[in-house]
Amino acid sequence: MESYRINWDDGTTSTGSDQLLEPISHIYTEPGVYQAIAHVTFYHTQTGERVEKKCSPEAYSLMTITE
Image (cartoon, rainbow, N blue to C red; front, side):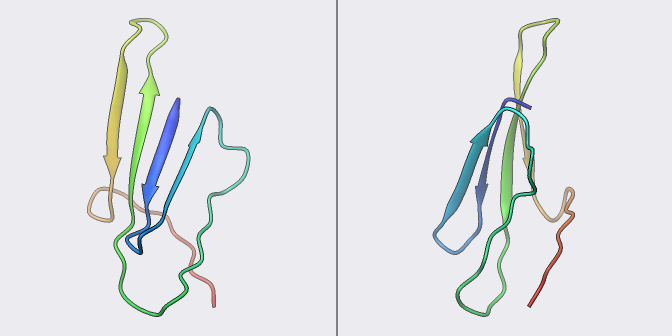
């Protein structure tokens, strides 16, 4: 993975690059229904291509919700 950008659907985003050493977390300040969408860019070392993938609840999600 080269970079990521997450739209948390509450007006905030998270961005980062390189390897994820810690889980990404977010706290919603208001109760509600949200659809977080992540855009992840991968770099293919053999071809030099960069590919962006959109990850949404319809495609794939692994979330832990705590109160």
